[in-house]
Image (cartoon, rainbow, N blue to C red; front, side):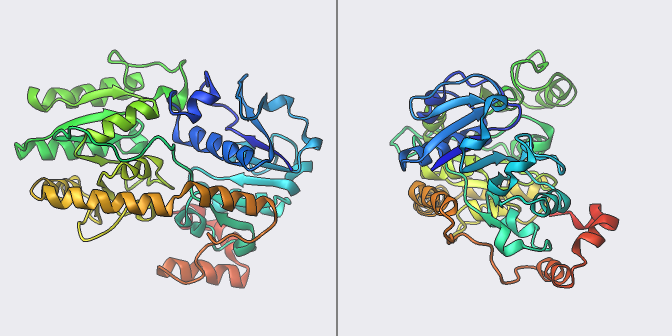
Length: 403
């Protein structure tokens, strides 16, 4: 079986695919997950081609540029959602019938409906949460499935000298929770606790080297100048965060193991569809703090220690972190349980098997729940049953498209 696996239409240049797979080179969670799936399929004996926006090389599979792909030779295409614009597939609509559209970000009902209605084979979401958003669309249970994103295998428990450090892992952008992180940290600082903040992330792995950075080199110029720098001036010297940049997985692994706990995207307006960073931190036996929204409710272990807040204020999540500081043993024990949870639920072999079964036309276990979790699920099912979903969507799209 010959399969084309396509990265986004545009993405920052990858120096070495093999280095990404071995955790030596830093890339975004999206790019890393796509490359790991390509690697899984190659390991299973499939003839895999990785399609990139620029030249690349790998010892595991052939790499080609998007525009050079000879599509008639492939049995299946697995493509990032950016290759579909609601009208055309960048590789041509004649291959829609053998195309898996792999979602990574929130998108509209119309986007998914148009892909299915135009003859697209299947939509793959990274979580049940995201797949469930589209349950009002006809063909939902057959055409929309979810398979969890795979995390890098370097993230395993490791003995380390744990510091009083809270580690944020994520993009330093206003849309991925960094504004909320600043507010949360300012609140914690007021309590004069023994804790430092480290920040692992960089905009360059998301938007490339051509982006205009601010003087500190940590974020886009406007965001850095107007929001980050003024915030830093309000913090006492002892509570200044340490900006680590975008760390390769091997370095991030070491940093996570040396940190007391991890915090991930706390934005209620832009919740995670999955959250590879949360899974990777837990795979190292670390507790993850965040918000009870989006894919975090699926990816973060929820035991006796509450680490995901339902409150939408900075103080709500800040108080959970402060509570954890007063119960260090509980946080450590929660981290161990979170590790078992992550290594079991996001097992690399089960993710690989799900993709292979999908390509072979076999049903996969990770199908969307048919039961109702919220009143919204009931409403969306009613729209699908009555065939009115897309008609209402056209008139009231912005209202109904909220996750």
